[in-house]
Amino acid sequence: MEARLRCPRCGYRAKSGSRCPACGFPLVLEPPGRLKIEVREPSMWRYGSAIGVAKGVSLGEGMTPMRSVGGVLVKDESRNPTGSFMDRGSAVLASAYPGDRAALPFMEDFTVSIATYLSARGVSVEVHVDPAEATYADFILLAASPSVSIRFRRAGPFDLEYGDPYFLAGVKTIAYEIFESARRIDSVAVPLERGLLALAVHQGFRELEEWGLMEAPRLILATHRGAVSSDIALWLREKGARIEEVEPAEAAKAAVYLARRGIYAKPLSAMAYVAASSEKNAAAVVTGTGLRRLGFTGRRRGGELQRRILGVLSGREMTAYQIWEALGGAASLRGVYKALATLVARGSVTYRYKARGRKKIRVFSAPKGIDKNE
Ligand SMILES: [Zn+2]
Image (tube, rainbow, N blue to C red):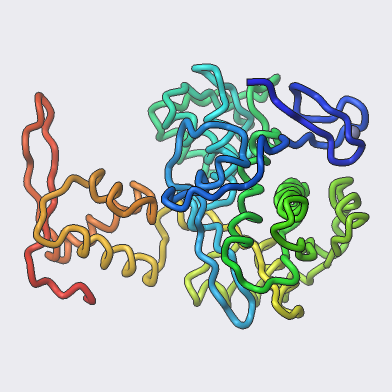
């Protein structure tokens, strides 16, 4: 497929690459057509008409909940399969990736996410790690994956990078989902680190505006006080975004407030929440900490998933995979396994082994009459 890449800053058009050869700004992938929502597709691939890449791999990313928390609509991106908005980008990037091997730099959330998606596609992944830089938990998680090999050096060039135009084309679906929620939203606060998340969300809203579907809400870019603004942030400010610097103490308070409500926000995401809370009709894009990946999912979420599993399983025998499919992307497969383990330990679900061909499979069942509200 011939890529239609464009530099949002100077308008340069390109067929490949990730940075504008003329001005160095990140390139974006032009949508192949107007947004047409496939309402029966329970993932962000419902926006396939405007993404520009055919679905090659999906783990149920996107369609994250939007919850009203203390007067702010929180777009809870921690509900993606590996716990962050990165999964949207990774799904598109991995779908478009033509090779069967990929060398990646170690970049925490990004690497965990893209390695998960590439592995699901059958691509062997090599992650180049500088042991002094690696966050230990993410590194161990990657190392445990059979399709990932770890190299203890940092040597480019890499096959895939954070901020690739295909990656941004997945991330922009956050804007589409905010549009599809049909709520009145005047401003959207986004955590600002390198600025790529903000750029992708801006791009999504700009497209919706061009198609005459909505008036783009104002972007608020939340960041640390005194943080140096990237050229992306400065460009977005020219386009009407506001940069809001948030005190770490305020962000910490917000992080605690959100955690008590089952949302485990990264510090910058807590800043986005703070920035949104001084506005009317505002939403905040909140991306998760690694806690969810490590299985710290909190009571509220676990209980909800367990109830849904009992609902699906009522009177039937199913494998964990079938349960996961029946839930239609509402949880990760890993999450389903975890919830099943809890239900088995509690006696709400039983299992037995069955033979399928030469393989032994485990089928779960829930005795009828179990209180689903347990
Ligand atoms: Zn340019």
